[in-house]
Image (cartoon, rainbow, N blue to C red; front, side, top):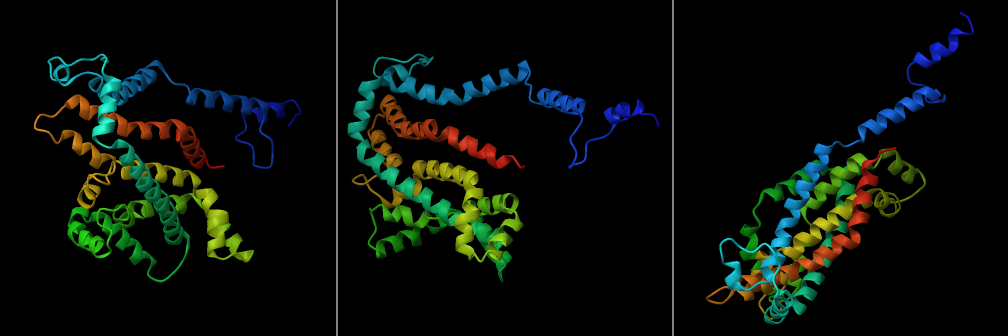
Length: 307
């Protein structure tokens, strides 16, 4: 074998071993391939624009309907441009539905439920994913089985329980039955099973850390992306929940969905007023997505990348 043949053989060799540097030409080829993989064609952008328009259109139509009067909304074809009555309709909806108190109540309810669900679901998910104890699989099966039970079946006994506790028509009656969800436990269990290596847990055991110390020092940093997603999903669900708050609360202490029913209580429904109330109830969620959306997306992407 001659010395002149070595560069040619190195150029055509397979991937470099982990302890050796890859050839310069191989690194350039890998960068070119990576660039081609992330390049999007015109059809991709067309589909993204179409999906964005379809996603934004319901919100736009709500704003259009809230800015006109009831007669104009009922016409055929309906209006597709905003009218001049947006702020007056918003002010009417704010006063007639007591939206100020309703938004404060919804913020308290949704915030407490989201925080407690994230904490308890992460604790239970860590236990089911990484701790070994007797009956673990049976308990996990029981938790998953509760997802198959319709929540309407428990309304009567749950309402009787809240009345016995003296929480009827109060916010704790909405908060305490939903402090944790089986969906959240299963979601965190699946995430931690894949994202949390067993070696990290064992290393904490070797250093003398107990389960709670391992949870707060090791599990929480790893689970942060999934916790952000679970918080957002739970907050939106609790904010939009109507059935149970409508059963256990009244118009003197409502959440936003319960307060909106007051706008449609008349014989002739004012659709523009109802849409104005719905727009008011949607604005806090939009503000949350604007403020925290980038952190949540970056957290999801950070959790999806494995080094």
